[in-house]
Amino acid sequence: MRSVLPKLTFALALALVGWMTPAGAQQPTPVKQKAPRLTTDDVSPAPAPQASSESKETTSKETAAKGDETAKTDEAEVKPGQPKTTEVKVSPDEASWRESVGKAREKAKEKERAAEEAELKITRLRNDLGISGQSPRYRNETMAELGQAGQRLTERRAEARAAADDVAQLAEYGWQKGFTEAEGPKATSQEGKPNEEYYRSQFAKLTEALESAQRRVQLYDNRVRDLNQQLMSNSSGRDSSGRGTGGDSFFAAQLQKDRDEAQQKLNEARAAETKAQNDLYALQEEARRAGVPPGLFR
Image (cartoon, rainbow, N blue to C red; front, side):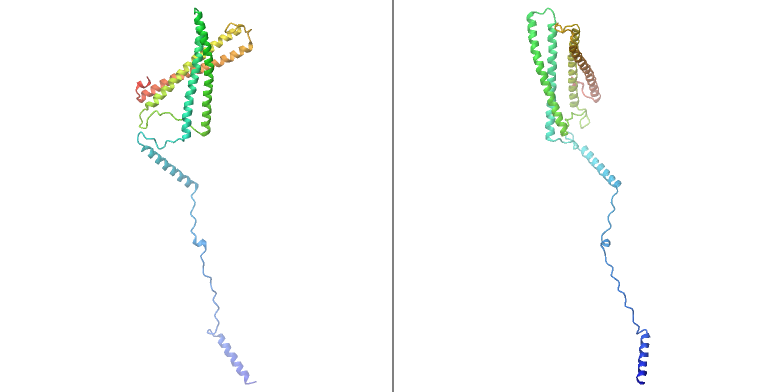
């Protein structure tokens, strides 16, 4: 027992010495670090900065300006006699409508002129009957012609109303479709020279307006005169044919209304006559300054 104890003591001391030496000391286990990984944020490129509203507006204006410059360049390169590239083409439907409404307007003017001329003829025939010293045969023939003229006047007025209705319907159709009537010729050509076709068409248009105004001045002046005479006859108890009316107040009120309307139409016709004359003078002066030959208006 005594021999074993020293040996055990020696072994314990030897183990203690080996543990305390650096060579026998245990090293701490190194901690493994995770390898860095790439994420989508690292790989994806940064988003491009969005253009502000001001920059967008500036870009749009620059693009529009370039388009205007291109259009002007194209227009400047158009050769004489060729249509401009900026001219808007109309659809076949609109072109057909323009032709139809143009013809309808011309027809309406013709029918209205025919009705006005028929009424003026009746006034002339009545005036002829009032001339003393005419033979019975002449008076009978005039009376027969007056009856036929009255029938024609009724027909002409109905035709004029129908033609005016056709124009109104076509105009309404065009308005609903967004159509526009064709423009007339311009005062100057593409070369910058005075356009004789423009002055010729304007002269014809204004001449027609003057003739229509003069005809209506005569027509409504006749109406006013006739209605004034009827008012005087009614106030005296007799109508224009000499028949007694007893001074009908209702009849007199209607005559006064018709007379006032005729007077208003007469005033409008006189104003239209003056305007047409002034417009004709202005057109001729404009043509003279532009160098248009004066013989164009003959």
